[in-house]
Image (cartoon, rainbow, N blue to C red; front, top):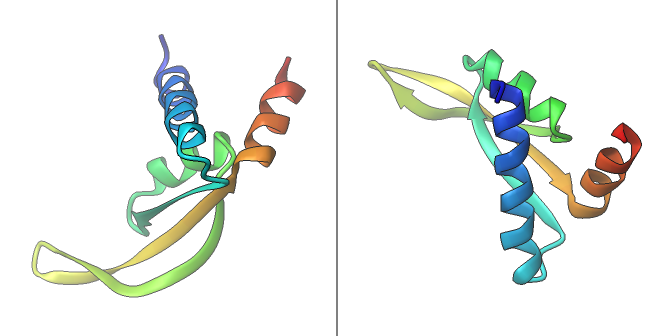
Length: 83
């Protein structure tokens, strides 16, 4: 399984867990220096919602966090369009 395929599978499991708790939206915060993760999150439907200045302290310096979110309805519509 490719890395993106694996992440898609993981995101599907997350939605199943989330749906069981009646959540409508998933969100995450990723370091702005982690461009690969941001790219993958966008591929599975997450959109940038905001910037958290100096949110993480890594290796002696502060780096910004990027808040990303996806609504459950948008995620499933995107999955249906891929078929």
